[in-house]
Length: 262
Image (cartoon, rainbow, N blue to C red; front, side, top):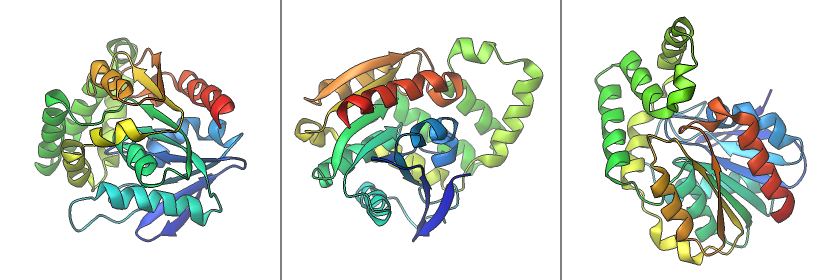
């Protein structure tokens, strides 16, 4: 099992040995929820470090809005505390702009970037989805929120492939796991803007476009890649959740890139 240590106020996961890999999870997720299905594969060749954002995983909820700069610095501090002076950074969804802030604020530490299903600034669709996400949560609709997030999170083919009885059971389990920090996470999704950081990124960058994404439009993901001089793109045929639909393919894209650039 991943080792959990406390880095006030964030709970930190450390796994594996080798070159450093810092992971930044998405809104409403955690290190385990977003990277758990591929942690073993990543840790086979890297020291993987990640931190649960306030109000998710084992981290206490924030008393106010989240600061992207503070989150970026705390994730870096978690890696440095593990003895990693330099590292690659993998960011999923909201973790993408956090990873970009890490590269902008700590360029001497970041050796490579992998950005999946992500954005530099939310477009109207993503901002509206994040607002609905927050409103359903605050209205106490745990099961309804699980239904909404499953709808926008999975590709059509993947959703169709789940037997109805299994889907109902999964929705109930999902509803019970929705983190208390959801309002702060979704507020940051709507507010964060790292477009000004893109042109200055020097580290080799891979943008993994989730081709059937109904939450973060693939065109928005490609615009992010176009703004980074060092970026190249790869596509994966999933909705917003490659760790649920095609974890092996997602892992291969990340490790293949790191084998060349890290």
